[in-house]
Length: 108
Length: 235
View (tube, one colour):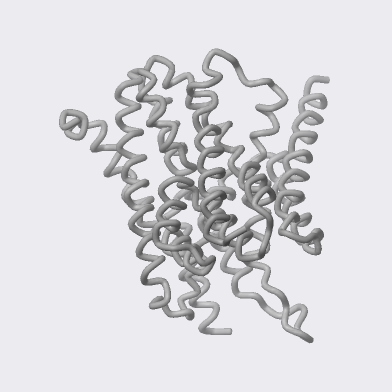
């Protein structure tokens, strides 16, 4: 498939599925309640899916012979995670996380 | 329309979202850069931010496209990632029940992680669904506008941003801001830890299938731990 066409198919399909998910219980199934097991499982979607995205982004491939080398991204993410846990603020998380990374990259 | 834009609830929602918008600027820029490096035209990049309107899905789709994954796998993985919107939708539904269908359709379109987090707090604090809905519309529109602008700036000016800024780190930080506050009970912590281990352990799978596999395993472990905890406390 042509790359541009492939991208547009992805945009339309993902956009439509996202919108239907957003609309689901607000409009489409408004008269039904959530099946209990589904409701229970959905509670764990953000924690599981987003963690699966986060880990590969911060755990960079270790350089040869430095398998245990200090990774400033892991340390900065730990600090940012701590801030996020207590402040629940995306602005504070972003600010401290980026500042910590720049600082750690400057000193290491 | 003008009366709506002038309503204090709409304005409060719009202004109240601005600090979160500032926090999202780096994320929006990275999404625009990601669209450019996945080979998107400016119109396709705008299509991603305007129609998908979910940074996590945009980043994921861009990465998987660049990695040569088939359309079906990309769409399926993004769908599982977007399942969290089902949960947000169910939580919002009782508050939006009394509103006209047009309002429900518009507000559903603006339902994102950040908008949900603020809206649900607001709805729980007020008895007036109209006031809550106007507040949500303001907050959602602030996010939507900010998202389109930052994505486009990232797309066109991304190559000007110095690499030493490590702006790509904004993406995991944004997800951390969503995940870390959730880690307050054992099943959720287990779901996150297991998914994090699984995504690395299954890194050898082709087409980035490790993402969806790790997500599903984490969701299953969290659900089982939740059921086990309930059975345990009932005794």
